Length: 334
Image 1 (tube, rainbow, N blue to C red):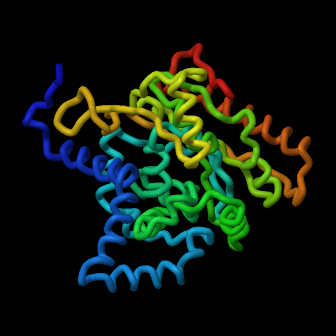
Image 2: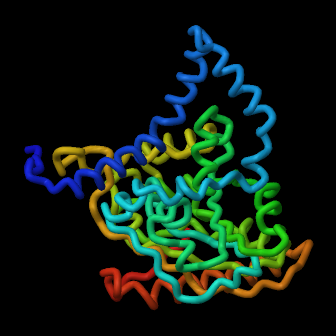
């Protein structure tokens, strides 16, 4: 039986729900909408708008690979404050980040839609710039989305950039420092494991980010978002099942995963595509110093990778009881 929310819900909570609704729409349907609008305008008397945008798009085509184009006043929009309060989302600092240096952050877990890390790095909803003064956060995202008209510009306003070596090199080698490049290490594939109570990370064979840190000589920062996997339920898709096989094949072909998830609705709490109101705490760990090695050997990569895993585990163990993780629960890696 569907449980309906009371009509006496305070306006504050309704605005919080609306802010999350627009965010879910932006990542599930806005790209498709932008393509339809771009093509549709060509068949109207406003065709010139698409032509003008196409010209701009061509001239600006390399921008997502060159650190993007953050728009600070949009990052500070009140919309993100409401989204932060919906869950709520918090950002926890455990060590200082020197604004004269650049950093590479490994982010875990991906979750279904990476809500926590979006609020923390792509907006000022939790006050990133006040907590880490002088640091400009960037978050990598699949290149595919930066090839969509209009949508690419929306993504860049928050600090999202392409997920390739060219972009990483551009951000990590910026003179003067003050840049943090976030990589959700488990990527789209890890989203298929996202469900309440899950602490299995796709990390054991993910070593590219470690090699990047060695090549550019930048500190590695472990980041863990407690509560990220609690936001949605997911249809059972255990490894070896027919559903997981289909999802894996689609992921290989399309580059994106398609988790069959559900949460709550807008006016009822039983079923829908909105995330549950459950707290997310993103804990930023202490930087791991990395000596620059332009052409690291596999042994050097493996050594730093294991050190990173150890530090991530230490971060998780030190904070898990504060965020209602059972004492006997530990991180698992695959």
